[in-house]
Image (cartoon, rainbow, N blue to C red; front, side):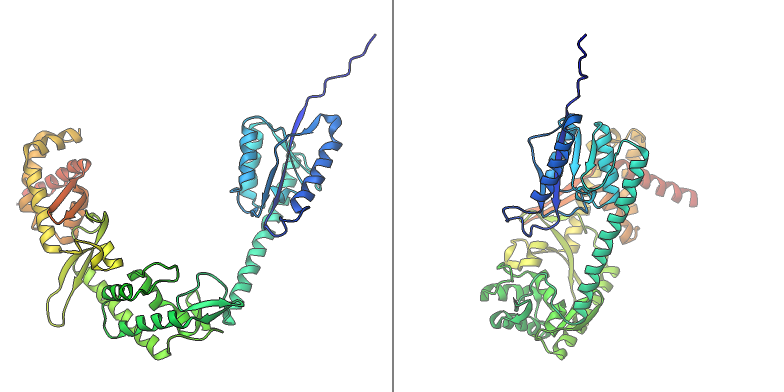
Length: 437
């Protein structure tokens, strides 16, 4: 009698390798190759169990194990989902991930497709509860090690800053890096000094943008400087010879571009301007803030103001393109806030009184009757002028999606879904007045 040998099922094995940095990857035989060689030998030792290697390679060189955003790992997970892999083989578990949370996600993805994984240097079997417990403990220590390493790096970084050392990042205008130290670039340094000097002279930052552009001055990235770039220069403690770390600063190893007196006067002026702007913003809420746009530049228009000593405040909406790149960059530049707010309010009132708007409001909200809509919109005119500015601003944002401003006029885009809510609120106001009477 012939005894047939039992058929051994084929087990498709994928080897995954990872290295945190790309250092040494150019070598003919690198760390990834060493990991793969050990894993391939392990798979070969399980040939009697039907194990064999799939043809694809899954190598992530220069990727951290702290997250799952790795190209080879993503391909591996896609192949697992497609049913092309039965076992994932790694040199050590932390090559797969160093995060306990990510490990849980991977195990869930493996279990979904009945995929197990093996470690060459650690004996684990994810099909048993004890194996899962052991793996969780191991990953907890791996994550702990990663967090401790990160803390060491942060502590070393902070200690170096306390000694005044430049620790990298964006090189500021006026300096260049030589042998890991900041060194002054004379031409750029003069531009920085000009910015501080003109600001203390009371010069407009908007005009300063134009002056710098006309002189051909550029930012560190080679682009023209806008207002935001200039204010970042004025706030950078590097220019007074300090290294900032959070809210603290320490004497730096580099040479200062600005003397201490210039720095102190600049920041006293910046603080005064900030307090004045905040005060005026609280006193005068802008009705169209956040919804008015320059049609020519397709940019938001922000509320601004001017006030000369002893005179009243004049409010405007200014195109952000003009704010950042000077008034010449935008044909609209600014519009008087009072005028445009009156135009928009008049347009909205007229639109709400139109019969087709009553029908549109009624159709947009099943919970309100046509009579309620008519009555509510009729009450808008007398109620509007009695509302506080903040309440007017809230109702405007409820009603209006966007206001486009161009030289030829203003276009108001209403929110259809806000009409029903407005009608209810106006009716409530009217009912309260009648009850009080």
